[in-house]
Image (cartoon, rainbow, N blue to C red; front, side, top):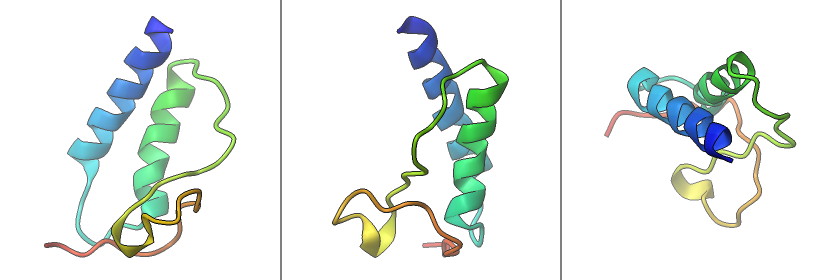
Length: 70
């Protein structure tokens, strides 16, 4: 569990660092997925990433929607 948490925290940190206005949810998600693979993490069953007006209802996969700078 400690290794899983460490990998997740690293991936989330890299997502924060790598975020840029105009990138898609899929591009942002790929940072977490790449980090997970590089560190021997388990398979992600879905590509869940909630942002903007689609945060509810939950369980919507990431999309090619671009983020805008606020």
